[in-house]
Amino acid sequence: MLVEHLSSIKRKRTKKINLDDVQIGGDAPVVVQSMTNTDTRDVQATVAQIKSLERAGCEVIRVALPDKEAVEALPHIKKRIKIPLIADIHFDYRLAVTAMKNGVAGIRINPGNIAPDKIRQIIGVAKERETVIRIGINSGSLQKDLWLKYGGATAEALTESALRNIDLFEHQGFRKIKLSLKSSDVPTMIEAYRAISARTGYPLHLGVTEAGSLVNAAIKSALGIGTLLYEGIGDTIRVSVTGNPVSEIPVAYGILRALNIRKIGPDIVSCPTCGRCEIDLLNLTDKIEKALAGKKDYLKVALMGCVVNGPGEAADADIGIAGGKKQGILFKKGKAFKKVKEEDFAKVLLEEISLMIKERKNN
Image 1 (cartoon, rainbow, N blue to C red):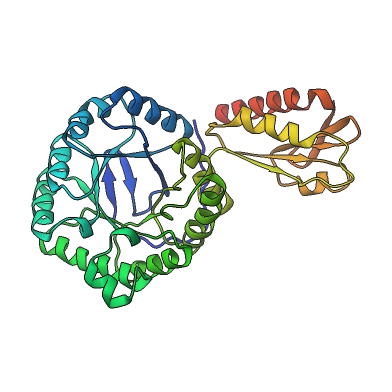
Image 2 (image 1 turned 120 degrees about the horizontal axis):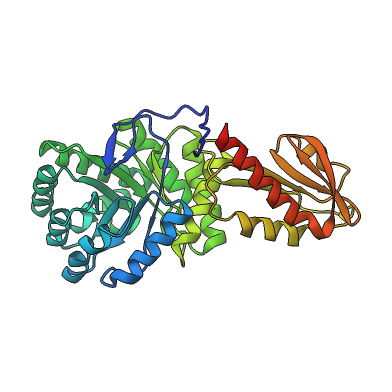
C-alpha cells in the first residue's frame, strides 16, 4: 500500500470537481497532469504514450483534437487507459460537442478562440453530460479587445478574460469549471493566478506555457508553479516540456516533494562534490536515479561524497551512503549501519531500499 505524506502548507479551499474518479479541488491532493504529443488519430501510438505516462505517475491526460478523425479515436483510447481523458479543442466547437458525447471526462477550451454563441452550445452539452470544462486562458489567444485595453497579455488582461468567461458560464448555470491562466512569462503567470485566486473559488490548473526544453521548463515551472503552491494556490499542475511528455512527470513530483506537498517517489539528495570526494559519486547517483525512476513509494535517499559532512547532512534521510576512499558507510535514519566497498555501493543500497519499502508495506 502506497503511503503518502501531505504538507502543512495551507491551501486555499476551492470547489470540488471530479474527472471520473480523480478529485480536483476541495481537500484533494494536488493532481499531476500531462498532454500527449502523438497524433491522436494514431490510437496505438497515443495509448502507448499514455501508458508510459501512467507508469511515470501521470494522473490525468489531455489529448489534442485537430479534426473529426481525432475525435472518433477517443472511445478507442479511453477504453485502453486507466486515467481520466481530457480533450483539448481550439476553434471548432463541434469537436468539443462530439468529444463530450464520446465520453471524455473533461474538455479544455480557450474561449478567445470560440464565438460566445458556440460556447453556449458547448456548455449545454456539458451540462447534459456532466463534463468538466477547463477555461484555458493564455497569452497566445487573448481576446483582441483585452489585448488593446491592457497593451498586451498582462496579468490584468488574463484575469479579466477569465472573469468574463466565468460570468458567461455561470449565466448558463454551469459551474463544473476548472481555470488556467498561463503565460510563458513567469512573473505574469504568478500575478495572474494570484489575482484570479483572490476573486473566485474555482479549482486552478497551474502551468507555465511554452516553457521550453527540460532544463528551462524545470526552472520556469519550479519558480512559477512552486511559488504559487507555496502560497496555497493551485489544485492541479502540468510541467510543459518540449519533447517526450514522460519527462514532465518527475519534474512535477519533484516540485511537490520539494515543498512537502506530496511525497511520492524517491527524493534523491546528493552533494555537489568537492576536493574531499574520493568516490565516483556522479556514477553512483546516475545508477540510483535510473534504478528508482518511476517508483511511487516515497523514500529520501542521501548520496554523500565524503565522511566529513556526509553523515550529518544525511541525518534526516531514510537511507544513504557517505563515501570515503574506495569504501563508505551505509546509513539508515542517520545511524551508521555497515561499511560497504565502493564497487558494491549501488547493489547494496538498492537491496536495502527494496527491503525498507517492503517493511513499510507490511507494517
